Amino acid sequence: MKNLEKQEQELLQEERSVFTAPLQRRSFLQFAGAGAAGVALVAAGCKKDRGDLMTSTGVTLDFKDDFGILNYAYALEQLEAAFYVQVVKTPYASMPANELALLTDIRDHEVAHREFFKNALSTAAIGSLEVNFSKIDFSSRASVLGTAKAFEDLGVSAYNGAGKMIKSVDYLLLAGKIVSVEARHAALIRDLLENGTFANTEVVAASTGLDTSRTPAAVLAIAGGFIKTEVKAINL
Amino acid sequence: MNIVNILEEIEKVDGEIYERLNPRRKAMKEFYNFGSKVAMASVPLAIGSMFKKAYGQTVTPAVISILNFALTLEYLEYHFYNHALLAAPGLLTPGTPAHGAITTIRDHEKAHVDLLAGAIRAAGGTPVSFEYAQFDYTGKGNFNSVYDNYVTFLAVAQAFEDTGVRAYKGQAGGLMGSPYLEVALNIHSVEARHASHIRQMRKATAGGGVNIKPWITGANDSGVAQVAAVYLGEDNVNQANITITNINGQNVPVSAATESFDEPLTRAAVEGIASLFIR
Image: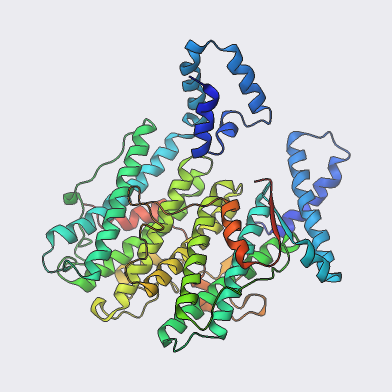
């Protein structure tokens, strides 16, 4: 698969050429894609020089192309990773060794996902999100596992709902590689809370046996309660 | 009959109906013009032709073939669990968590069978059909105690669920642009939930106390040499030319790097695995 950074350089070259060539439909679409990458570049620069300004303006997920969808995934993985880093750093009272091992694994997986998207998106990546975990009691097993359950089920439904928006077959496969791991997490967390609830009717419809899909708007409305940085979604 | 209302109703289910009907931006404008020009009596016919345009073209023989491939796997799983529940005395005791979990999974596989067969029929295709007797769950003699021994039964179950996850993942690209992609994704994650739970059942003492996690670690963590093909390539630590192990200086061990991404299997590889269980 082509590295995103390389792809972006090609797009930027394409951007220059559209000023000299007739604006065909195809080249216009490529031009539009390069425009988004350009905006992201400016945003990254802004963050480096004036971090406070970046925080106050928030981030924008532009769903007009795959960059927007990958950044959407990157945002969710940032949220999950930050959560599990805290869970393992400050374990709830008398966390059994097997639960600590499983939660540490999940932390490592989410960190791997987060860093993967960061590198894959390269200069097109949104900045780091500031999380808001004030509603979570990290000393309470019920609070931690209840939040984990919500995050994992949310992640599964987000990837399931975004699949049809992805234009690149390679990115669709990457999303598929990640979503099944999130589903494995979700099932485990559910079983830790109550054995046998790994795929109950809260998430899987009995009549069809289908898991849940959520639109980006629905996902961000829920995730937004845990993210301080303003996350805007456009071109949905 | 109000044609606009019909489309609005459809839009609630399929948000991209206007895009499907006419992917260009003038779609709505053209549509209203179209509606005003067509006599009311011919509207149903016009709608029929629009749906054929919107959905009919996407259901290619290749897509129907993928759906039948998926349906075959769902039959394989459904009959496996159904027989365990109905005709394997002593394997699962009603009222136990194990019996409850296998019942949940069996019911999902049955729902998937019905859903896929219905979708294939609706698309004008012919769904495949399998009876229990057409399968050999001993895997041609590799798992002779599959319905007598709970540990063996779970080992085969894990192989089926992990294969299912990899099979759907491998077919997602072939379903791009069809209305079945989302259906397949929504089955895919359910199979992953099943796999996670079956793995926990195997880890429990009664399930054999197998040293295994809910996620796939390395190239064959099942402890069963006969199912090595199910896990071929799961030890991959490189995604899109990015090395996941210790990525960006983070502490991501090799085990977590392999666990954090599930890998696909080709249809041929899955059919090779399944053929061991088909008479």
